[in-house]
Image (cartoon, rainbow over all chains, first blue to last red; front, side, top):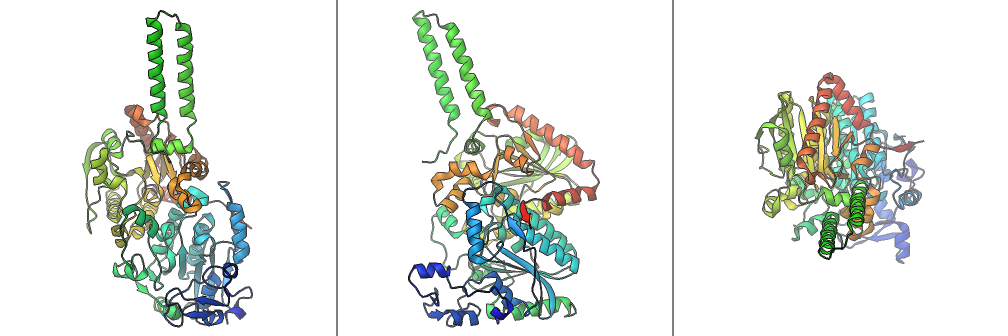
Amino acid sequence: MLKSTFGRQKLIPIPGSRESLEDQGRDPGQAKCPSCARRVTESELIENHKVCPECHYHFPMTAWERIGLIADPGSFQEFDSGLKSINVLEFPEYDERLTAVAERTGLGEALVTGKCKIGGCWTVLGVIDSRFMMGSMGSVVGEKVCRAAERASEYKYPLIICAASGGARMQEGMLSLMQMAKTAAVLDRFHQQGLLYITLLTNPTTGGVSASFASLADIILAEPGALIGFAGPRVIKQTISEVLPADFQKAEFLLKHGMLDRIVDRLELKDTLERLLRLHLGGKNG
Amino acid sequence: MVKRHFDYEEKYQNLQGKFEELRELSEAMQFDLNDEFKLMEEKIKDIRDNKYHNLTPWEKILLSRHPERPAVKDYIEFLFNDWIELHGDRSYGEDSAIIGGIADFQGIAVSVLGHQKGKGTNQNLKNNFGMPHPEGYRKVERLLHQAEKFKRPVITLVDTPGAYPGVGAEERGQAWAIAKVLMTLSRIQVPVIAVVTGEGGSGGALALSVSDRLLMLSNSVFSVASAEACASILWKDAGRAEEMASFLKITAQDLQQMGIADEIIEEPLGGAHKDFKTTAADVQTSISRNLDELLSIDRNQLLEQRFLKLRNLGQFLDE
């Protein structure tokens, strides 16, 4: 179904790239679940939306896979696909990395935005793809978040963003950091319209993304087991030199500490979003 | 080994000492080298001047972290009258890594917020080296709403390595606390002036920097993450921090060119700590001028200008 909806959809082996699996001499058609060690085939995973059929471990999902999961079939229309990053700081190897990752993923940048129907409700949807430089936020990701919110304001649509990011994109220096303030300012105006903003935090959501648009939603959902936080666990370990709690910075830990509204299993995600949209729109939108 | 201190001044003092020794020795031996000494003295001064006008980004980082560099508290004492510190986030605790309160600035009641590093080990430990927990940012949030209620302009003083990366900070929602402050500052209906006095480290510094005017001291820096962290993450080698610093565009001068900093306040030769009074007086003049300008702007226009300033940040291709 995914394939028929999106012509450019490719089967993405997990974890990491098909090439990396082949390099390691492993069969890209198969992967081992990192949680329960069960062998899962690629087609089995695609069918199950990249959720382990045994233990419900959530494998990483590409932006287009996520859009295929959430959007009503055939309804997604992409915005701003022509926005491309430039190497403002002339940072070493940044151009090369951008070219390579764009080629490998077929993506223009880490965030795909557009409008689509979800259970019949028109919605503006943004999804970050963590394969694109760890889903990091530079000028383009910040701009696309803002334009998505502004379009949603204009159309009076709700806004849903699925986050997965290591934080600000260091290769763009302070301009990246300032995207935090920029998205916060634009989302404030969005909220003033009385429109609904939902975020889904997926593995991982940290740094400048967690401390800006990802946590400024009316309703914050997360996928089970997702790593969510401000500082990365490695930095924290180095700073405090203590053993961290086992579930530290996992979605379940965040829920327990009151930072999330709900943890949603991926197989129930579309249904949950549809219900939330219906409750906010009375199902009349679109 | 990564340098931790700015050692140029030390080397310069050594040289100066040796020079004096040589002069005394030659006088004792009745060598008449006065003309040569005069030339040499001028040359040494020239080289020092030249050095301070051409500090590398890494040297500016070290200078911005200099142990003798004036702290936010020093500026507060100099800049304001009737300073009254206010504590607590009303929800969990008091975080002394952030100092907040109200004061009189040249006859105008203002709200003041800043990072507090502290002098010496004990104070630094107490203030967690100026690295706030979520309570600190929630105190900021509270005092911003208070400022808005009483129509007090907000003046922030920025000097932090970053928000604290620790278990408690994560448990209590560091990301949530910072994001909320960013949003509040973007829409607060009073003028906001931010002054980066030392180290502007990442999101923890940004949370006090969203403003109508961002002023930076000439040796202060502002970075997406510390040069050490960037080198460690991108190059897996924190030892290459100096090289990283040269790429990140973190100096006040670079940030003014990029349209992020609005104004640079020149420090005396050798850095703010060489002449605090002059530095602080220049900060005062600059805040005063900017505040006058901002207070003369209609409130809606002020908010629109601030919004557009934030909205236009970023550079990209739009094909």
